[in-house]
Amino acid sequence: MKLKYGSYTHGAGECVVAIEKTAEMAGDATKWIRERWNITGEIHGSDVADLTAKIQALETAYAVGGKDIRILTDAGVNTAHVMQNSSTVKGTRIVQHPSFPRGEGAEYATYRTFSLAVEGERPASGATLMEYRESVSYAGTCEMTWKYQTPLYTEPQRQQLTAYSVQQIVQEGYAAGLNAYPAYPGPLFPDDEHLEQRMIRLEFPVKGSTERRTSWRYVFSSHLPLTGYPHQA
Image (cartoon, rainbow, N blue to C red; front, side, top):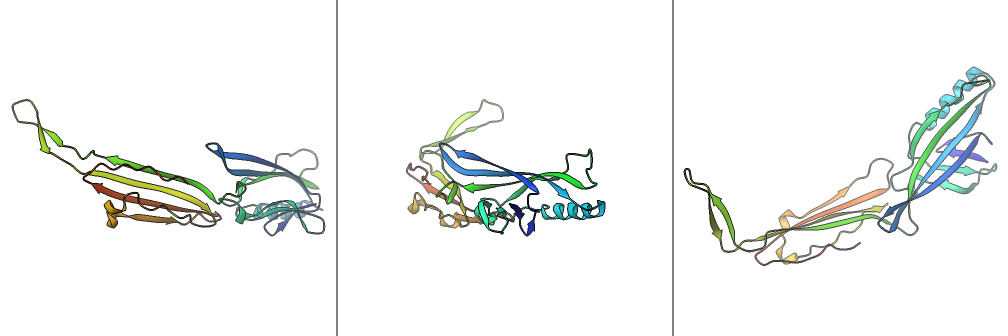
């Protein structure tokens, strides 16, 4: 068996790979599966110069994330253990860069022990919508308004300003999808929306991420109390 990360291939039998999978929850549902590859092994070389070159190649290969990692057969065919960068939510990441935890015996004479770790989050089975949130905020009740008048020499006096007022409502939220921008819900009160204040935002993901985020914000005003509830995903 051989381990391959990006275009870098380890020697046959060079590595021991332990794979951990942990469910990340959103309420009662599984949001995604965090997969971590813990890799240990030994680099062998004919002399110190050969070891140095191989260590530098290892460190260069695992300097950055965003690459596929896979275990291959000796014939170069994929096994069941493959984590593709494009199938992860935010790309594969190097969470432990190549480390060299041992120094006794023939270390750095004929071999060098190393360890490293690669991690990524996969969506739960069948999931393309990774996250969704929406809120609706209400300000005002359409009833009378008042304030305190503060005279120079007497106590503050409460004074009515208007018999009626306007209610302000804000509907906003965001959704994150895998490899595509999710659709956004429409306004709850289209007849009372300030169209000039509508904001739809598409966020470009960080390098290596496959997550796409859409956010929205609607602003409404009404002379009658309105009632509406956030949309469900």
